[in-house]
Length: 389
Ligand code: CUA
Image (tube, rainbow, N blue to C red; front, side, top):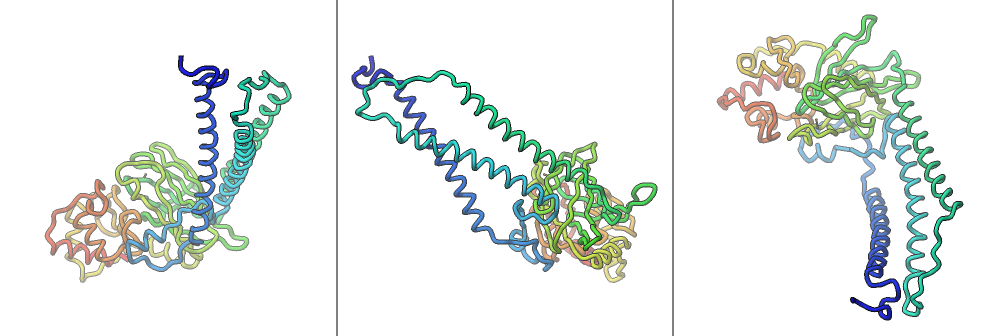
């Protein structure tokens, strides 16, 4: 026999241990809850009130990092605003439930704890109470029902929004590990392709009375990816053999940043994406330039020939040349982009050369092979690429 009734009262040692453990875990979970709320509040207060970054060109790796705003609580589009509001509502409901359970629990555990002076007799045991059981069944049921209604309505509102005539249509194709954007023009017979670009999407701002939301058709060339620009919209997956849809409508000019949100292989974390919202005039200028064929600069003819006679053409397209590859990004207007390698390095001479010579040093495991050319040849190809504005 371990312990006696005299030492432990009539509940016995193991029950005592259970009581102590129960108390320990109850108070523990309450403290963890408080800790989580505290962390949230601290994170919130330290967050820089970052708007969509302005359009200054990015020069360094550091600025690419600091430029990234992945905060769902700073929505800049009607649908991301709806999502943020639903999230606030859910956090509010959870906080109320947490306090309703946690505070009485702590009071009861402290106030009615086991005391030395207790006579060791079990308190009256109550088995079953209809009013209480009805209350704690109906209460949560109503809460869940309210959450269900609010969520369903929000999903429906976002899904059902029809594309106005001024909407921009882009076909997005997820690749390991970059984004392809094909801009489409809507006409009577459906859609025709305007041009294709990669990793950086540009969209026009809406104006009073002229909404210009961006409608995306999401597809995948290989595995599942997920298109996620937190300030603009919720996540939507890109699934092989299927076309998903989403839309957003930026409220301010500037760069919005995002990230592939579905694990898609070794370089998943380096599948960034950027969306630039700009006024209609600038957007139209950009579109007009993107639709043109690549410039042919005679001073870089050597590099151009090298590009067209090496394996580069198997993967990349340069409009107006024989390069028609579909595996890698379209390079026709490469130098109109701020970044390379799906947003992770600045699009500068230095990084472009490093990318050409040794892509694995930047994105280990990526599908761009090392070409094993001479330094002279790399420099010539570099000079050619630098003209592709
Ligand atoms: Cu693409 Cu993760």
